[in-house]
Length: 364
Image 1 (cartoon, rainbow, N blue to C red):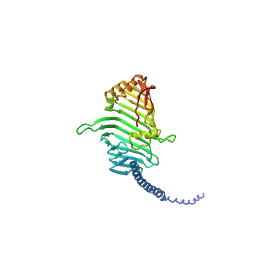
Image 2: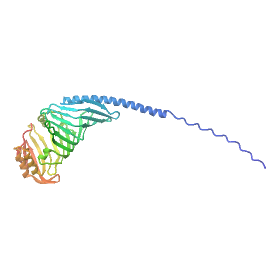
Image 3: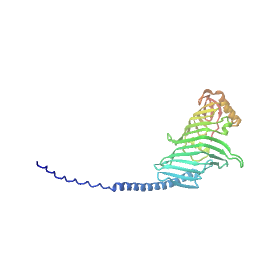
Image 4: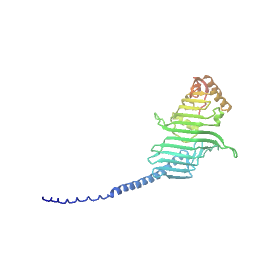
């Protein structure tokens, strides 16, 4: 037997060399991140500097309009994604109309880098409101007071909102006496936005306001023991000029501009009383009221008695209130049985259901 021939040895396959890491895959992204951070930092500090200059310019423009803003200490922070302006002892004084001074403990305003025209501010109390003409002063405290505003690229305000939680308004008493509580509310809010003028008229303002859980010694004296709920909504055309000025001057300018005040919704309710109103009014060049109001009252007798006890009904107005009580039509007022009234104003003449019942003096 022939022995088997051994097979030729198989040559080993060459080994695959180990893959080497590519340093640029790590270095390039890292460099991009570092460069982006440097660029972003530069942009933020440039924008912060510009924001400081814009704030100074805005304060200057406000001063020319009669509103003097100041802080004992102002600091801008918030890097890297927002701007935070902190202000100690903020103060606002108004001149050119009723001279007032408003002060608070501190304020902080915040705007995101990508939306610098939208500012949200919070104020720390207590705040003090002073009438510089009479020396009368009031003190307000709250758990949260927040404002927000949106402006266009020129800095002109477009929207404004205010919310005050657990608000209390007091009038300081004489030395050694307790302050007088004027108003308290679980929540008070106010919203306004610019409404474009039509037919060449100046811009106006859409407004809405509300109050929940309200208590007031004044309202209690008028027969409206709390809690009081209130809602208000409407538009005032040709009213975007908010420079401080005397009331008569403001009303005259508003009338000359063809302004109209539209009340879309108003109601105020308490456990015993409810009131509602809608309508539209304007002033003629002589300051006389023209327009109409649709009113509703539930618990009107309580209101009249409260007004009488408080001496809040002038002698010439008392017959008007009595007429209202007699000619109202039965209807629903905020879900309660009440009386509805149609009032109109014709060159200052007040008419009830089309019949003259009094004269409203010119407002300027």
